[in-house]
Amino acid sequence: MGWRRRWRRPRVVWFYGSRPKPVRTRPPRVSRHWHRPRRIPWPSVGLYGITLILATLALWRTSPRPWVVVPVTGNLLGQGHKSWLARSLESLHVSRASTRSWLNQGIPILGLTTESQPFQWRWRSWVLTGLTDLSGVRLTSLNALLQLEIPALRLVPTPKAIATTPPPKPLPSYSGQNATMAGLPGAGSRIWAELGSKPLVGIYQTHSSESFWPAIPSGSPTANSSNWSKTIVQVGWWLANDLHQRGIGVVQSRVNNMSDGLLASYNKSYYTAKQLIKWYPSVRVLIDLHRAQASQAATTTTIHGIKSAQILIVVGTNKVLPNPYWHQNLTFAMRLAKALDGVAPGILRGNGIDMVPYRYNQQLMPADVLIEIGGVDNTLQEERVAAAELAKALAIVAPSGGGAP
Image 1 (tube, rainbow, N blue to C red):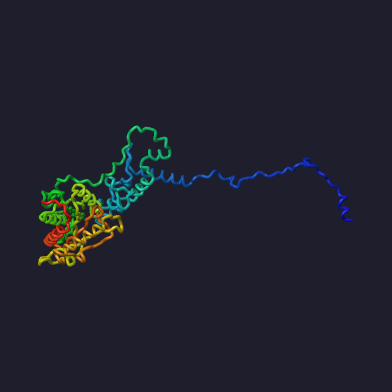
Image 2: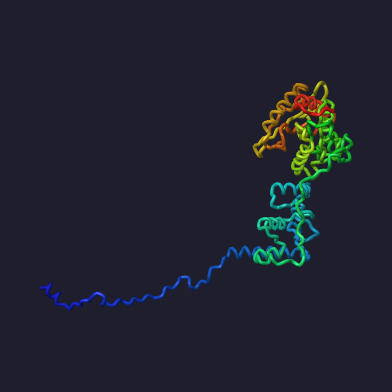
């Protein structure tokens, strides 16, 4: 009977389309971040604020000159006292020119060598210089900072031209081929001493001030001299004369490649060697003449009963920097060493050839080598004997085509 009771209950029949749709009410969706304002770009605001602070500091610490932009490498901390860095450099006996050259080659972003005014060695100046080079905006110029944020200001003409920093210094330039310098040995004291027509051998000295302990006053701090007759330049002149006497045209460059200090010497001698090749295209053998730092016991020998300085040929490879000619330079060095051992047995130091990973400006041409004659303890007479023997060997291996005297 249970099923009958269920059917007795009232039933409501809805016809299609007549059933009312239920009204659903939903509370409005409230954002969980309704209480936060629009997000602020804090990194941009922070960088902008730091830039304004640095610019304000730079402008505040420099002298007010209307419409003049103060170089960021200028003195921003006042005059009259030396910084810790400047005092440290002086205590190490490092010249400003050497330090500028070292920084310019190792950290080009500083651009210290382009500054004509005296540079104050201060950390804040370096930081401002780096920020300026990275951003491309002069931090000491209020106009430049405003134009960065408001580009339309670039279209507004300025009432007066703004003085900018001086242009970078050009590459090292040298005097003409007939220029002279007091104290140079022979050739009328010409810086470029040409012996014979169409020189076949070119000689230059990167460390042009290298001297020898017996030839300089006692108590000298280093074995370097400004008296050219007691330096490696004199040895190069002897070598040039001996080659000339053997019928080989030769040119010796006596440019002072150490005028800016020891650290900058190879950079300067690179342009000296390039100038030599440009002015004298007939040169087929290029020699950078040096003396070693070794003691006398390692650089002295006896040749034909006479004391002589020993000779070492240095060949740079391409392990550090590209050197397309190092194999040809090595071949020439081996021929030269063999000739030296023939004309003066025992004159070679060690096996006669020292291969090094650095190229020492030997990437300029084939048969481009560095030759060390003697060492710091040799006498000028011992250097003279070795130069004569080297000329004999060079006359044997030098390629044909050199001009006769």
